[in-house]
Structures are given as C-alpha cells and as structure tokens.
Image 1 (tube, rainbow, N blue to C red):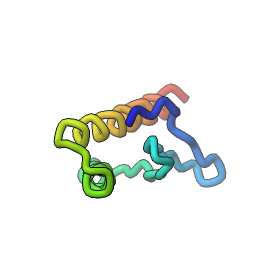
Image 2: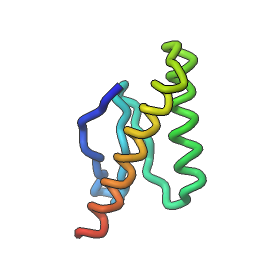
Image 3: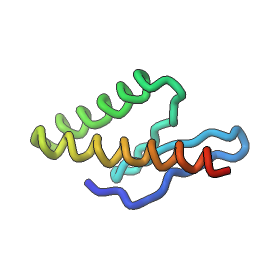
Length: 78
C-alpha cells in the first residue's frame, strides 16, 4: 500500500488533498484531530475490506500522514 503520488492541489478553491494507493482522496483539513480521524477511518476501512494486519494498517496510516506533512511543507514553500 505505498502511494508514491504527491499531494494534489485543487487550485480553483486552493484546497489540498492526499491520495491513498486505492485512489481515495482525503481533503487536507486544518484541524489536526479531524485530519487524524479521517486518515484512521480510511485505514480501518482498508483493514476490514482487505483483511490488513495491524502492522499493514499502521503502515498505510504512515504513508497518508507523510503526504500530509509534504502538503503542509509545500504550502509554506509558496
């Protein structure tokens, strides 16, 4: 479950998203608690649907979280 795609930006509304390897897009939210919940919810959906182990689920969350940090960094570099 490794997504090598960089965060996509919707310039029309200046919104950033992160994208899971499955293609699901998650809007980058300014509230860290809500962002964490969105990532965890999506990872748990993968766990149920694909029977992922706890380690695989955590790895998926790590990939999504790293995309969040990259998107934030890109915002500061502008």
